[in-house]
Length: 179
Image 1 (cartoon, rainbow, N blue to C red):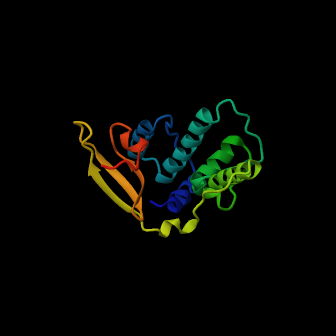
Image 2: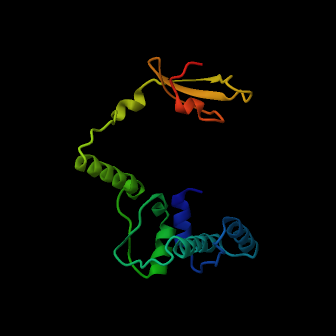
Image 3: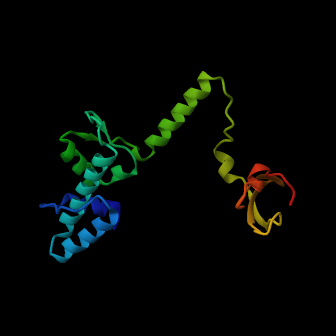
């Protein structure tokens, strides 16, 4: 089911089912068992949301004092069942900002930009058109030892940019070496 349907159905829960959430395998078994016992799908789904929030807070959040304002970012914030469960567990408003799924990347880019400016570094960014460049991929068998590894190669305009795939670092260490 889509994340939208999952969210909608989880939010329709009237009586969340307690799901064992410390391990994915146990959670799956528990959900199947609860379904066989006759629990409603919506209650199982929201119970899973609650289990995931408990697991997160008991592991990643362990020992941390989480105080408002609480901003929830990342792809998981698309799941409104998780948002509600987090809000209930922390007894606080959870803010899901627009573009929450890319905020981490934007933050990383801002940190790199700040580092570049503060240390007078020149950017080696090739621009977004780099995705339109026609790279050439190929492979060959290395005969440097009895392993006969298949080495993958990436080239641009006849110039080797990278090689990888060996059991040793011969080709990674010297990507322009002739084979």
